[in-house]
Image 1 (cartoon, helix red, strand yellow):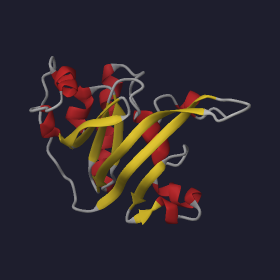
Image 2: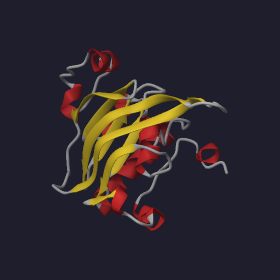
Image 3: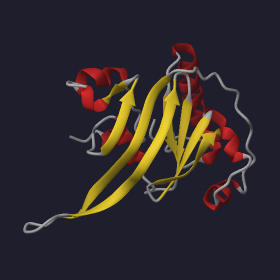
Length: 193
């Protein structure tokens, strides 16, 4: 879910996130929750990955919010009161990301080589069944690029392993994608043909 509640008022935001949590528990699905809001992650995610400039600066269960190692995460949470979340994580990997890298063309050239800007640099994490993984970072840190890479709407290098199957071994990803859902921040502009 890529910033699924950013444009909503507070009460509707809570209702949507509570509904996602209920679906997580009822259907035993895994969710990647992408947001810049550390308080949302602390309430709804059991584990988190903190992005800065396309790199992971900190990751682990949400206890890292109570004893952050990086100065970046310390600054993000310095003024927040954060409550602990109970966990219902299974011991089965649903998603594993290894050495993921992605880049955009920053300058397109008619003659000569295009110039690329690295967006994601060696991203590694695991998502287990029943887990909600929070992806946190400022605008431009690579959160949405990660989501687009996970559903193969963007070129990347590295390995994405879905339920034990490497994405490179999947012949028809469109059929496989039926088991993967994404909730965009603004579906009207995100799905513009």
